[in-house]
Structures are given as structure tokens and as C-alpha cells.
Length: 164
Image 1 (cartoon, rainbow, N blue to C red):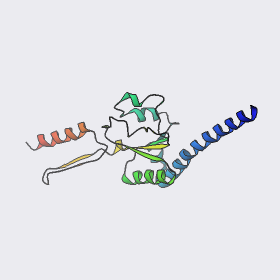
Image 2: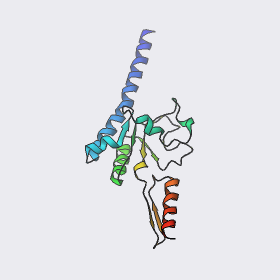
Image 3: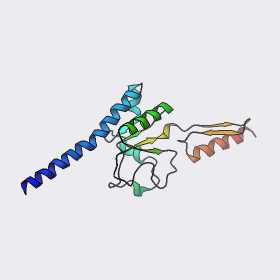
Image 4: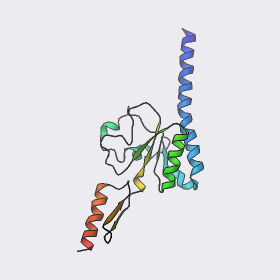
């Protein structure tokens, strides 16, 4: 009985340390690819950050995906620029992590901030990439993927009011 228990305990400790390893390797990779270390600290959230839970739940449209049994990401990256996104995707691929992309809050299925599979993943939250640019002369609109529908409609209404 004792050898069996010892084997079980050793396998559990190995599994725990192995699951922590990808997170540390990912964060190290990401820190090397972010050119400004102060921006790294402000843009990357792990379960060790006090803001992690609120950032994770910030755009959850369905509370059924925020239960304690729901799988959570190893990290949440909130990029300011395209190179931040590229760095996060590169480091996820390099370390075998799945990527979930969250944008604008219109994910009622919860696919952007959780997973049905028991695999490690990272959320790239595009909340900081939310500009809406309207070019009336060319009749075009450029909407970054972090913008909400309310922000989009608000800018369109503002432009309509300005042009009347």
C-alpha cells in the first residue's frame, strides 16, 4: 500500500510542477519580446496578480463561465500594439499553449476566456485596441477588435451629428 501511495504522490507533484512550468516559460519568453519591462508588468496578468480575477471576468457575458470549476488561463495579455499580440502568439506556440482571443465583449459562448478542454491556455484580451475611426469622405469605418458595439454606434452617431 505504501509504495502505491508514494507513486501516486510523486506523480501528482510531478504533474503540478509540470503544469507550472509552461506558465513560467511563457512569461519569460514574453518578457524577452516586450521591449519595455514596465509595460510588461502593466499588460500581463497571472493568477498571482490581485487584478487577475477582475480582468478575467471584466467582459464575461455569461456567469456560467465564471464558476470556480471553470478552467482559467495561465495568463491574460492586454496588448497595446500589434507587436504585443505577435509576441504573445509566438510565445504560446513556442511553449505549446492554446490562445484565446477576447475582443469587444460580444462572446456569449465564453469561447474567448475559457476552454472546454483541460489544456493550458492564454487569453489575449484586446480591450486596449478599441478605437473607431470614421472617414466620411471615403465612406469607410475602421474598427479595432476591442471596441464594443456601443462604442462603435456612439462614434457613428457622433459623426452623423457633426455632419448634419
